Length: 399
Image 1 (tube, rainbow, N blue to C red):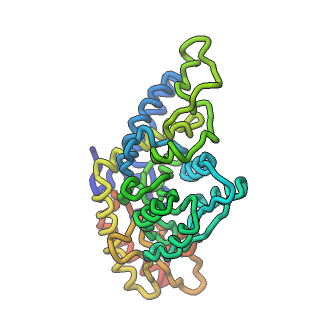
Image 2: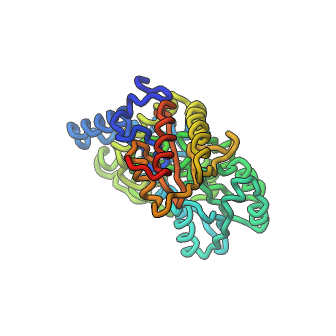
Image 3: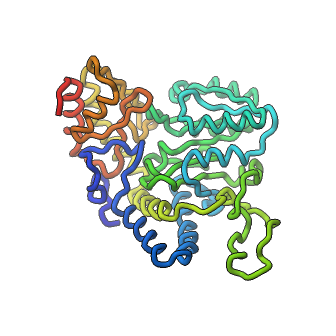
């Protein structure tokens, strides 16, 4: 693909920052995404409704691409399009067959998108919320989780990567335990999908939700939900449906009278959760960004990003008052380097990130940490600027 090479910013020259390290927050659309978005908009401008059906058909190929990213067995059957991660969590929570007293394990410190919907459904169905410890899970201590599984859990809901520390959760070990004790595993993958390898089959993941505007490098309003074929068959009910949920939802619009019916069978695939019109431009852009990810290969992207972070981390932890909470081995690393930073007296964390921004280095500060999150366009040539900027701001220098 033109302009798609590790460390090559040619598709991302519009970014104001010299070192944009915020892909864990929001990805600026690259030129390939902008072109796909613009092309789709242009067709709608000329064709109106005539552009709609081709876009529905184009999204079917996107299901396959997304399935390839997460190693889904039957992506055309198991992938549903969702506007964002939260919508995927809510759709799954509402469609699951619950029984009074079912227990859901969530994690203290996890992103609210993967906690609040489970609390909400627990209130509605008289379920029990159980709390887990993210640090213990990251360190591989799953004894407390296994003890809860032995007592009976319906579902374990966890993020693949923690948003504030960048810790990689042991999805394979968790999935194996869930399978052993008859529970299901739900994964919020927005801090992982697109930058690190994921395998829903290998890790016994029943459900996975992901928005498209972070590591997938698309725009807001275009994401997806994965539901395993086994979960579709045994665990979900049609409790959340819309006009696109039945089989052949369009025929009453084009096949003449007699096709407008309200008693049709609902789709057997996860797409029954796609209840209404979607963000056509957003999915066109997402398709282009996923093409680039697949072309480069997630394994190669992961190694590129972590080589970048290895070099940055070595320089930053040599500065006074800077401590890394990143995993020490590749098997525990992700796309983010998160730091604890002792700030100069009187400086707020927001001021620290703003001063880095003035020097051309864009970072995030989730929940008290400083987070650096590069992606495949980031070049190793940026690293001296990042190190010099941190040192200068910590020394109290102004740009």
